Image: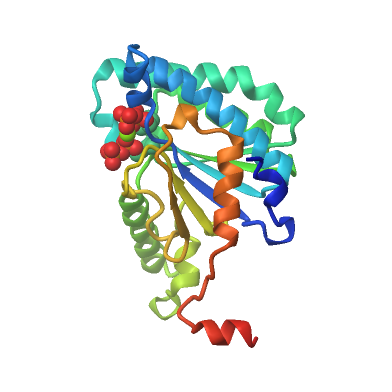
Length: 248
Ligand code: IPE
Ligand code: IPE
Ligand code: MG
């Protein structure tokens, strides 16, 4: 089934976030080491970014490495970081060619310095692109982000730049990693796991969740389009009743 033609472009979500999971299990199915799964996962990233561009999506956030992933075996971490540097330098020109603006969220300072450098270079050199904003979540976790925001807010209060009375959901938003990024309307997780794994906890308060059994290296743009079609069939009530929405 070709899902692209079923998408209602006038009701496209602004922002889709994806927990790209299942690379290791995919590699195991192919009797290969885990890194083989990660390498094939990069091909899925390329296909999804292309698909997002085709339909004119504004924001796509990809969970690429969590704070907790630092607890993986050192060989896997090293290979993942090398893959990141290699991919960034290889894909850099195609990001520009496709008008993609790269952004990154997470504790970037904790990345190996060549990774951080390559990443910041790609962010800087694509900052004027006006097409898709591709947000990479790296060394990211939501609890880290929220605690970090609390630190920044208390500093601002201490330095009299912010008064306690002015702290609300809107001002809080200014202190999180996604301060310039709208909340995702749709969150996708691959590989059949039904959990959030410390991803965008604040931002997904009202996101629609979509889980698929497909492992990340098997996930392609048609799967993305299928998720969007599924999302578009849902009624987002935001606490109201269905009747209120119909009569508005
Ligand atoms: C997701 O795939 C990629 C990262 C977390 C870096 P996994 O590596 O978690 O794959 P599984 O879950 O072990 O199959
Ligand atoms: C979540 O996947 C993190 C990323 C996709 C980068 P994990 O595979 O690390 O999640 P858990 O630990 O199984 O929940
Ligand atoms: Mg996993």
